[in-house]
Amino acid sequence: MMIFGALLAFALAFAPPAHAAAPTPAPVPTLSPTQWLATIRNKFRSHRPPPPYVVYTESRKQNNDRGFPDYAESYSYKYWCRTSDRAALKRKIEIVPAMGFAEFERAAFNADYDPGPPTADLFEKAPAHPVAQSVAPTPEPEASPLQTIGQVAVTSEYEYKVTSVTFEGKLVHLVLEPIRDPERNRLREIWADKDTYELVRIKSHDRLFVPSGVHGDDIYGVIFDIKIAMLQGTPIVTDIHGIVGDNYSGDGQIVDFTFRNIAFPTTLPDWYFDPKTYGSHPVSELPR
Image (tube, rainbow, N blue to C red; front, side):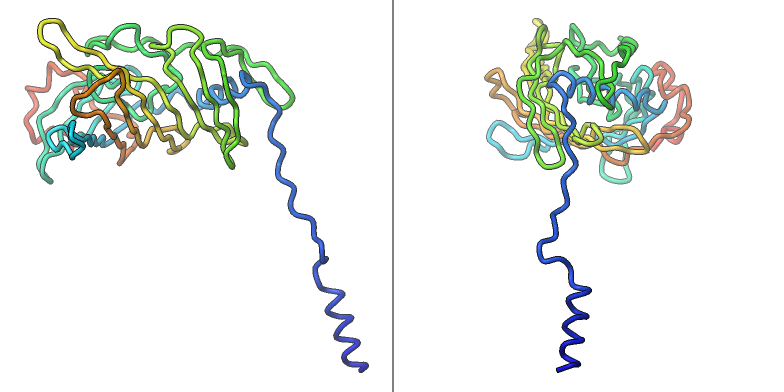
């Protein structure tokens, strides 16, 4: 009995409490809807400007109007992009190891070609008119002076009304309504880490341009569901799922883009961004 009593006392001494308190979750910062949006935007902008060059592979997949894979409009390109003006040399990836000729593009969202680059400013306004290949982007606006609310620095944000703020696990989800000019103020929903304020996903308005002969392009609204990750301290777009609206019934009602093999070289040759010189460089000099 003496041995049993000693063992029982030992077990009780080192046993965990019967009703140990559960860990208390970290409190969610008390911010107004507008302050949530401004804080998330400021966090995203704190990582800008992006590195001077970005190299990436962009792949597009879409279905035809009957819902089957549209192989003619599903393809991959490799891009060498200068981020200051988004000028890019691109080559189509044919059957490996073959690659297409050098082509020039000024990568952009809301343009009559594929979206990009993955380092784009996702809070930037859409252009007032369709983007022309020869037009360089305007400089990004300077951030407003920061105000301190508790321990969170924010700026005023007047382009959107935040109609809903909800919490989904570790994320905060904002539903936005443009106060003016919804074609240019393109954000519709955003998700961010509620503790770090880092952006992880957005839904935004974009455009599909369909050639219609002498009258130019027919333009349809698109909603892009965009996934975002961090690479070497820079937010990057990794995946886009697009759904075309405005009663569009042609091919590509649903389209998907992926951005992979993303890298930030420290330098690239100047001629990559001068399409007038492409013809003077043999295929052997083109980047791969």
